[in-house]
Length: 336
Ligand code: UD1
Image (tube, rainbow, N blue to C red; front, side, top):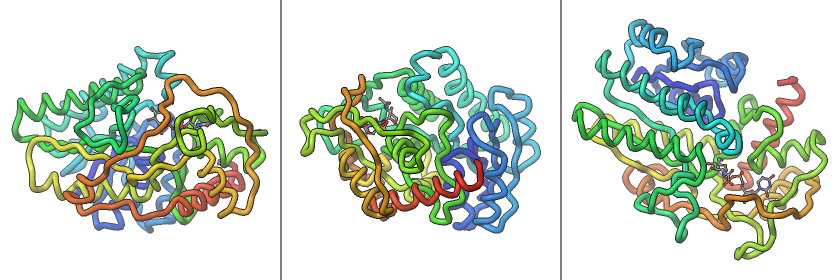
């Protein structure tokens, strides 16, 4: 299949491009490079030995997007391109709603015009907000607690309404839990701008000596060691989930929703300890207050994806910690 990957030079997008190519698909990347680097393309070449078509455009420019659909014969779209920082989304709601919702609407309009009817949408576990219970099934209530999460929930509704109104469409909505890790080559990975918000990039930057210490946000949660519990999933497993769902799109109309997670939780302290052990390096940390909006425990029930997509996250938390560190070391040594 010829797959248009929006946001294909970003963290999850770039790993998905590798999986697509390894599984025999052709890829066209569209990205405005607002949160990624053009050098990702060279590194994707090193990993895949394929020259990947790339168009630097912003999805909000529908005329340029339309030209991409004219230039390439697209079979399917995987739509990653979006703003994703939770804190920033609270400060810039207009920008977040405009970019995340406007981007999807432009993609859908171009798809309809050019008779492309299959799309995979990058959603997030944050649409569930603080869950009533874990593991979280896809049927759990949708009640996002921040602007970023609301953009994802609104996009999901747009896809449901569109597929109900026009039965030519097939949409797969993937709700990611906590992606960490990097490609085993160490050539691509997560490259946050400025101070990282998420746990793993913060850990790797402390280990690399870029930041003095990690603050653990609270150790008085009702969890085994008092720190927050999350469902970390290796980004390469997550990427494979996108390839697995393409079969569903080929054989079904309407829409489907799948959780992509491992189905088990790790605490902040467990992740730090595993990172220190597998990489033989110290991570300085202090215990601080809770971060507002954080749930104590959040992990998925991935059985629907396991059973229906024949997909399962197979990499261990040790793999995640090792590969995250390999990428951090490469990024530092290459001045990325
Ligand atoms: C966060 C977002 C979520 C988003 C997800 C993307 C918030 C409130 N939630 O989720 O909407 O979908 O990222 O990956 O921002 N932690 C520390 N110290 C740190 C950073 C994190 O102790 O410096 C803890 C957190 O309290 C949490 C765990 O580490 O228990 C994971 O945090 P994080 O990586 O930010 O992910 P989420 O909170 O799950």
